[in-house]
Amino acid sequence: MKPLIQPFFDPATSTVSYVVHSGAGSDCAIIDPVLDFDPKSGRTSTTNADQVIAFVREQKLNVTWLLETHAHADHLSGAPYLQKHLGGQIGIGAGIKDVQKAFAHVLNRKDRLDGMEFGRLFEAGETFTIGPLQARALHVPGHTPADMAYQIGDAVFVGDTLFMPDVGTARCDFPGGSASVLYRSVRRLLELPPATRLFMCHDYPPAGRGPQWETTVAEQRAANIHIRDGISEEEFVAMRTTRDATLSMPTLILPAIQVNISAGKLPEAEDNGVRYLRIPLDAI
Ligand SMILES: [Fe+2]
Image (tube, protein in one colour):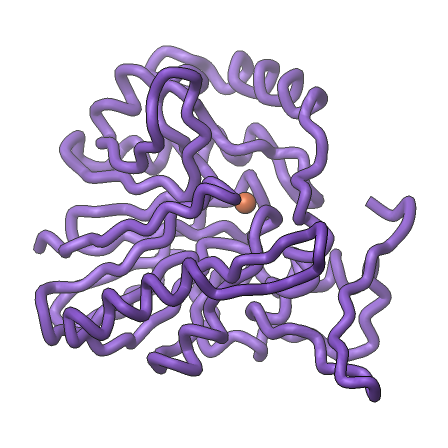
């Protein structure tokens, strides 16, 4: 079964969101939707999500799922906004409960986060359907302990595991991240049939090429600069750990995480009608 896949690339955060469907009028899933956020002004906007809404309406699709591959640290989730306008159930890996615990402590959150903010928590290997499309949630920890990839027909939405072959792999230095765990997750993905289509969650194109997001298992096994066939776990971990030590935190990590562990729900407005995000000092 070959799903139809419509990508939406967000240049501000290099995120690729997807609408996965099986033709006009069918059920669909939206994967990793983005809410625009300008950290300089503290303003949210919906240019990106509105493009997704326009496509869904034009194709007369029925949104059954809003799928998050993980609690993103680089953008705020657009899932609640899309859910309000299009419906659908928000799903994420069950390991989100551990990510919630880790960050609720850092953020000193008094509200109880127990995963129930999300409509559906997927266990490793759990299956579900999108109209006639068969889908499976694959647990691919390493970047975070809760990362899922979604296998839908012949396509896999890999989340933050692999990037395009010339970019490599996702960082593993966030709380609960592990380079050796990521290595094993990626190698499991690369055991899928060689023609399996792989769709990236991000692209950070090197100078000289525009953004791309689609590749195959065969291409990744032949050419991924970090984890192609022949690179051992030991070599990968040494490379990943050295590289992660040079990376600064993503610009939006603090705004993004506190919103995304609440399934993208923004904080309630205070008595002056303004919503606030919290910035913990010297805590991460
Ligand atoms: Fe991420």
